[in-house]
Image 1 (cartoon, helix red, strand yellow):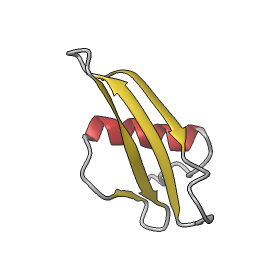
Image 2: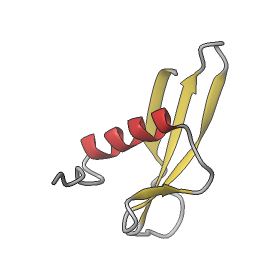
Image 3: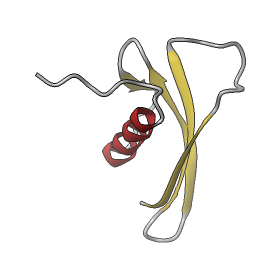
Image 4: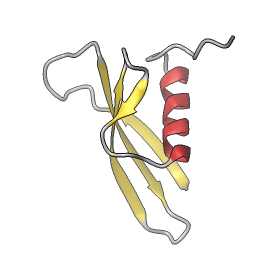
Length: 76
């Protein structure tokens, strides 16, 4: 994955405190453009919907944490 970018889809209708919708886009190693939407459920602390690549969801979780939308996971 190259040129990976995320942005929030905040104007998607009524506010919902239990979910975060975000766009992603990247370029594959074969120089193909890919994009989509990730749906993060805050109470369940996971991405819901179609399964996504582990690298993509890890980078998305890092983005959500850095932007303050979710708290860093608690470590034991």
